[in-house]
Length: 158
Length: 158
Image 1 (cartoon, each protein chain N blue to C red):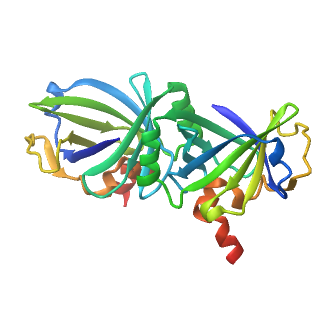
Image 2: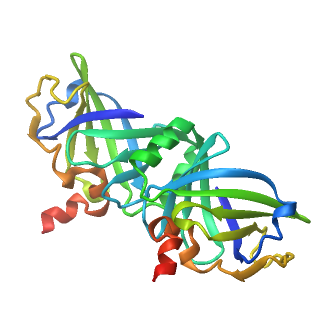
Image 3: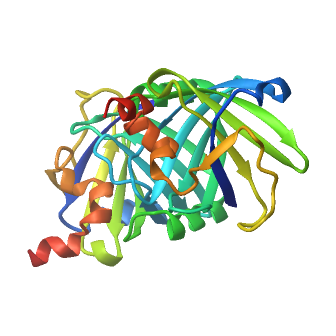
């Protein structure tokens, strides 16, 4: 088990792109729609994982992850997952001791770009780049679980 | 992925016990409470598994299963699982080409004993022993997911 501490920010411009590396396409979905725990299937870069994580408002979560066969993962996404499936391209950006993960969403969440940083403790100091806007760590709308059930395109309509 | 075909019966007496083998204690729980799919963590005989299965009324289900570390499984049961945890002892009983799995429940489900048989096709012929009573394959109350959220002890009170 890992205890995961992440902070999440909206991305306000494209200035991060020139320094980003290793873009990878992600196809992922959730096998549940629970408040207390998420069960995620993810296919990325020719590999696949099953991830189980406590869902609590805030930055600390209990997390378990196991690699599984890619074929199983696609079958689970097609047969068992809540719809719609989330599709996004993740880019990585090194910044001192930290690595930002920048997710550019597609499909029903197109237009949304968010950046996450993983920290060693909730109060760890880190540099906030100019392209990072409002913090949304504590906003449930930006949880990937919620983006699956209430995608970004519906926000703009309402 | 396996396509699982099972039929389930209530057990009406103890006459199966003399021929049963390999009793194993199970501790298991569910990480969700969904109608369309179950995510189960099980510890049995010093090993542990994560099981993901479509939930459909009837006998055929899509199923995926992965072995995981026992320590992870106990942490998931304690931290992420819906409560109460299901505890039961499973016994095996060979009968010609088939093996019956007989679950004697404990804790909040004490008093309930059910037997399952796995078949190669929905219409496969099998011998129904004298200790097997009413078929409950299609009764959602006997799903282990439901026994976790609505345990047997509450049935008798209501």
